[in-house]
Image 1 (cartoon, helix red, strand yellow):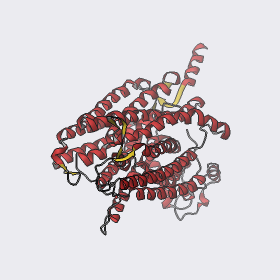
Image 2 (cartoon, one colour):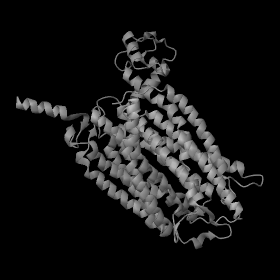
Image 3 (tube, one colour):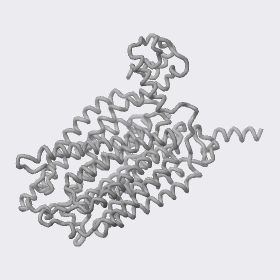
Image 4 (cartoon, helix red, strand yellow):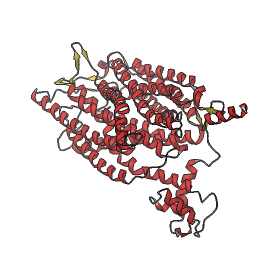
Length: 564
């Protein structure tokens, strides 16, 4: 009897769908939860430290060390950033279909470290003596030898490949450490996404303060080398937690991409078939699953002759999973307008900051790229307020365990991002007026007597928007995709930012060419005192507002998928 009771207790203590590092049933009491998540969060803090150590000041390196124009550098930064946040789609497919999240994280980390190492080498080869390249008359720089530029961009995109495998898997693997079927762990999982962003924001703050200062005041070799060392240490930390992790196990089912692809293929093949062939019990199930949306996929259940086929074709769950993915498309598309706005913080905002008085106290100036610290600091300060004050208060009013729904959270963030662009446009107009007032329009390297504190409100609004929209998107896409596609779900959130970066680059290119003619200065003129970033910000505010209105329409009709 004692043995029977012990066996029963062990069975109750195991976590369904997970095993330990040796492939044995994993015990809830000795695995996963916040202890395991802490190792994974530490790894992500290091990765964000490394990534922002490269991305935040990249436009400065391109315009100074590589001698590119402001518009070209902004396009290159957006293109690289877009690639880095689209590659997680490929990394997620590799993880969910072949390697698994744990092994993909290790492989991606090795590639990441290699890319950072080569980036450090390229910086060492490129001369940092500005006097060798500086064209003092035009305030521009000449490019270094082509092979050094090729090595630099090869290294940069190798970092993007590493991030592509690392980013979606780490967060999904961290969320996997909490059992969504357990009431207590389910609440902890929702909180995990908040504290995940809080922690990585700490890494971003340190990177923006320490690494950017080193890059601006010491040298780029050290500025790129430190992130490489930190990523190497992060891999060691991740491996140290291996014995505590919960590893998801795959059933004997077909590949999820094959299953969902077959649904769409069969529905297209049966496009003209009469749905009356669907059995009554299947119809009842469909009604129970709120499957009135995307009804054409119901024809997947039919053979071309209108009859049901057994097993392989007649799989309602596969069809529901396909519908769940397709329902995400309108939400994904409308959030692209936010992603376009998001791309400005590391490009045009930074170039604005360069022209302004950045004195903190006599003898010390804050680097322009470090102004992004205000975004991360806002997140660090606001996440605890959101998680500990806002959520319990909202929960008492709405009855929702998360306080407000995921789509409501995203909507609030989109609205705040529109406000941030309005503020940015007004501040830029003030900056241009100040430059004109002090006769500095034709002195691009002069410091405009206008404090950098004028830029802080737009950075703060960016931070608030991120707490709502980016965390909301992470949890929404993780929660609303099939369980065995969780890495893909998080890569969808990242792809929003990636495609947004490409769109931003495209818009900058089009606007630059459209406004740089008939003897007029481009909105992105290298001399920002003659440029018109304020017009561009108003354009983005209008685009964001239109996207927000469309989003509200789609969000109202969205039907949530039951999470597991």
